[in-house]
Length: 133
View 1 (cartoon, rainbow, N blue to C red):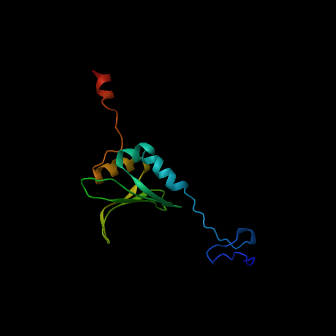
View 2: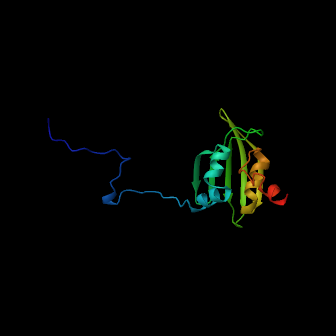
View 3: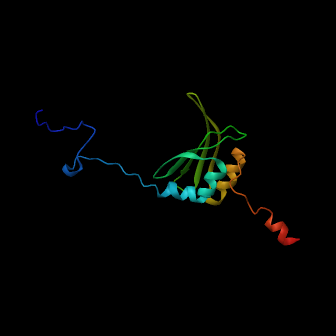
C-alpha cells in the first residue's frame, strides 16, 4: 500500500491551525432556571428530559400530564423576568397551549404546576399539620 495521508473532510477543522470555529454557549442562565425550578427533584417529579439551553433560555420535554403539554420553554427577558411557553408537539404539529410572561423566579414552580398539573415537589408532606396539632 502507498503511504497515504489522511485528509479530513471540510467538517473536521484542525484546531492547531486556528481553523476551528467552536461555538460555546454560556449555560449559566439555563442552569440557574433549572435550579430555581428545583433541580434534580424537579426532573424526577415531572419526568423532564431532553434539556437544551442557550444564553437566556431553557427548554425541555416533560412527562404525561392532564393539560397534554409536552415541552416547556423558559426564557429570561430583558427585564430579568421569565417568559414561559407551554407547548404540545404531536407528529409534525406544534401548538402553544399556554403562555406566562413577566414571572419572578419564585413564581416559576407554581406556574408550572398550574399549567401542567404536575407537582414539582413533595411539599411539606404534612409536616406543618403535624407540628401544629
